[in-house]
Amino acid sequence: MKKLLLVFGLIFSHVIFGQTAKEIIDKNIELSGGLTNWKLLNSVLLQGKVILGIKDEYPIRIFQQRPNLTKTLITTGGKETAIEGFDGTKGYAMNYAANKLQEYPEYVPESFDNDFIDWENKGFDAKYLGKEKVGEIYCHKVELTKNVNKNMYYFDTKTYMLIKEVKKDETLIYSDFKKVGNLIMPFRIESSSAKKDGDYVMLLNRIDINKVFPANIFKF
Image (cartoon, rainbow, N blue to C red; front, top):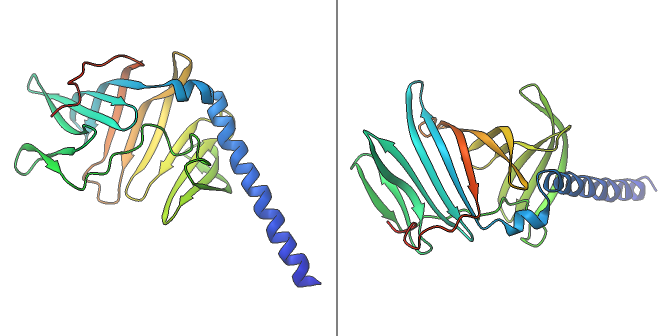
């Protein structure tokens, strides 16, 4: 009987956690603009500056378009240069040792949407892991798993905005949320990794959505 009760308890707790994770994700999507508006988002242009280390900062523009097209450009010495992107077929990134942009055959483009947008249809499992503090903010901690890949998401318990995202090789902190059209987006993004060589802070001053980009914008 004790073993039977334990089994039922484990099943029940799993159901509760699954429902809680879904409710938290749904709440984030609802309060940040709604699933319909997120699915209607077709393109994004981010503009601002990126800070590397203590003093190095550069103007930056990032073009993104559904399903996975992307291009990042920074300005140094008055010249704007592409440093990374995916044109729909090939991925590119700056080789700083050789000081030139080169093709990367194994480049894996990220999806235009966050994983938790339509996560169930994408084949993810969601698990609620309780509350945890990120800085001074209490957050709901949700884990999304697909095959061997696991991402951790931290949602503000008050606003349900995504505050922190932990990937395999990168941790992202989001803040300074503002309304862009019908959506709410972060204007400050901080990235860190164990290697520390790619750490940055991005401060955005403008986000444009659903712009029609020139046909050749994603060419390299």
